[in-house]
Length: 478
Image (cartoon, rainbow, N blue to C red; front, side, top):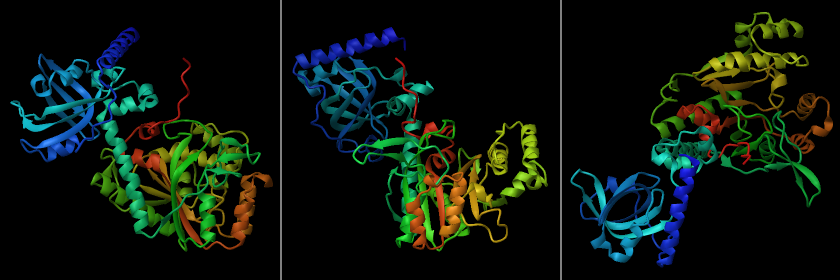
């Protein structure tokens, strides 16, 4: 809609608001509560039954001394029929000032129109919120991508399929909690502000605690505090919460994202594989009623494959890859149209091959196992090969959905591995966590599930921004 036309419509609506107030009408009343949703009305329709409904006006048809309008709530829309003789002059005066987008309540009797439409014949009508701005594109659906993300309320208001996606997200989260609690896990909460950011290799957001006079970091992972609880005797714990990483944005990445982590004393990466497979299948069946998800593209039903990381790498590079010197690996990576940095270590070059060449092709569920120990410093080394760790990455739809591993509980080995990750900078180590390990942590298995990516996979959404209510965007420069 042209800007000038929008300004004119806003001016007209403000004038209506002014006239209503001058007439003693409250355009923002708070004296009406619906008795049922539009969906419930239709599902339990009975001619002559009394009801009270409320919602946003999404259709308005003036017909002299009567009017038809649609009230849309979060479940559905219901048509209401208003006659002047049923309301009287004072209430009908409100009708003359209505616009699309206004929020109203109606009390009346259920009836069916001549065209077969289930409707409410109104005996009381209350304006609950006057909309001063016109709805997007006359309810035909908001299409502008930036506006959809920046003003999500307009997206939800005008696109029913978007509302349904976020209802699904809420149900997915609820089912995850129900599943884990059914397996004996306890939900906990750990600090979002941490003195030392740990549990992953990522750039944190930094803030300042004025009272304590020191910097704090928004957490990049949940892991280290949950493991402290294992030390304290909590044997099955999980947390679902926000993580923050001060890094780039992409179709798969948002700086603020939701993560589930769960830890089980005396478990290992094998038991965690079974847990995550059971969990995701349960959620799919409970929320979608099928194991074929993502628009039918992904089948969660068959037994999920397991493939070793090394085998996948060698299949696209060379059987001799892991014996090659670093320079030869860089040369091969460039032949694969990758851009390795000159100072990358061998494991970083290798993982770039995996992430850019292999992972995008893993559409059906597959557990990629036994990653190089340098990539996962918090996991136990494999008995069969000390160069790798007992780890899996569950890949579905071309992206990692859930990592999991046998947790490292040897405090001496853990210190050495974290020190290597920190390039020898001891001040970057979480000494409190290492002290906790020295008190004894039981052997354990752990998993992490990116909730946003899980929702993407299950719903078939193209971008992580499509499944986050309010994704991060650069502020407008108006």
